[in-house]
Amino acid sequence: MSEKRFGSIEAGGTKFVCAVGNEQFEILEISIFPTEAPKKTMKQVEEFFSQYPVDALSIGTFGPVDIDHTSLTYGEILASPKKAWQGFNFIQSVKEWFSDPVFLTTDVNSSAYGEYVMGSAKMVDSCVYVTVGTGIGAGVIQNNQFVGGTTHLEIGHGLVHRHEEDLAFAGVCPYHGGSCFEGVAAGPSIEKRTGISGEELPKDHPVWKIEAYYLAQLAYDLRVNFAPAKIIFGGGVINEQLMEKVREQFEAINAGYVTVPELNGFIVASTFEDNASATIGNFALAKKILMESKKA
Ligand code: ZN
Image 1: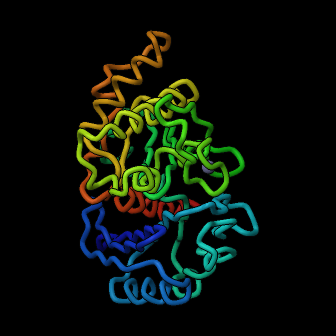
Image 2: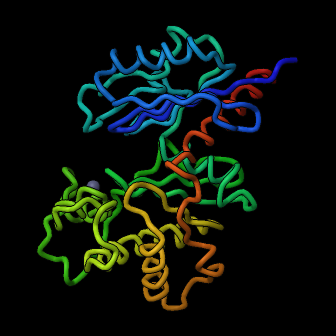
Image 3: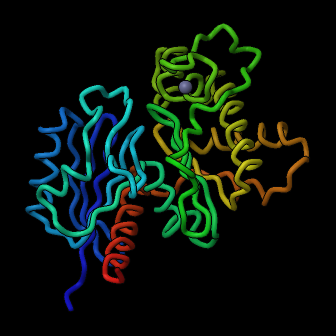
């Protein structure tokens, strides 16, 4: 029996990453191209996988998206700020040229799964992956299942308590201004305050203290709501100095209330390079759907 190949489509707001992996989830082929109109971008996806065939595919996409596999609109992009993609159905589009099993979830769920199978959460049964980049989102896993009742979670749009030195900032969320985490702590909020991107902002800039205050609140909310074994941060804004500040602020907010593992191992930055956790997660999810399809 020949070795299986698994495909990953990571559909981000600015770029698509298509990759092929083997049964050890090693990346064999990878292609990165900008996110344009659905027709053009999906043509590039199709061309990639016709060149490098796979046995099953998993898609991790920006949202909001219908991830309920029993729904008639499974795979459809909902009220996304990316207008050209609203109403676009990923599953149907891929099924036009791919007849093997396809799985779809959010990009952060794919990343969480990558951390769960091969990353920081490999040795534990629960974790949360939080991305802090263009937006803020989180995927929660418990006992090999994604958490979310009717659809995916929207933790980035949860309400935030503002830092006293940041009250004048209006925020950047089109829906909630400066009232939600995404509005005050996503990459664009850092750039709006300072004129410099989160990746390039000097590590001693005072905005990092404010950023850490918000991410510590988010980590605290995740702890009290889901009690995960690990909280893993990834995305363009995250760096180790910031994580250090987040742990300090977490400790101050918690004030000794809930028990947590040792903080250096509880609140961590992703160890995957180039945010590869979503790609690895998709390989594992493609393998899972392939095995399930054989049982059915
Ligand atoms: Zn919001």
